Length: 96
Image 1 (tube, rainbow, N blue to C red):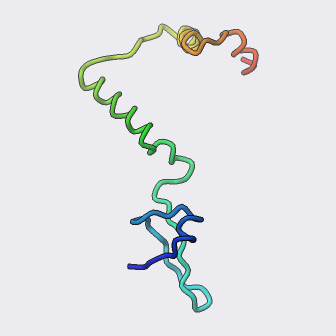
Image 2 (tube, rainbow, N blue to C red):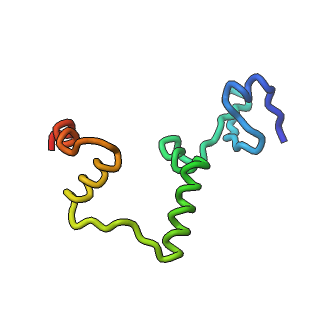
Image 3 (cartoon, rainbow, N blue to C red):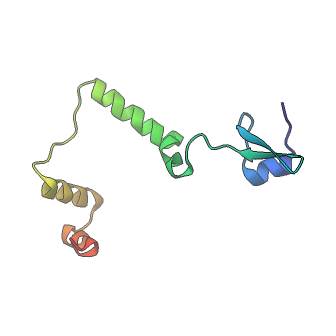
């Protein structure tokens, strides 16, 4: 077990149990925080997102299904309506 000083833990946002990569460079031990989940995918593993994933899994297990749209246009209109946006404004901004 290695103890990292508190000021360094705070600067690097290290928590107890975090994994570190250990290397030797120029006769010194170098510790580098290891990211088990790539940083660009960390949002998926947030507690909030995982709660939503569990909710969807439970709904599917109960046989519930979401709304089915006839085509992409119908889906776009439904999303725009739900968000309170004008679908034509979305098209203009997206240049589609």
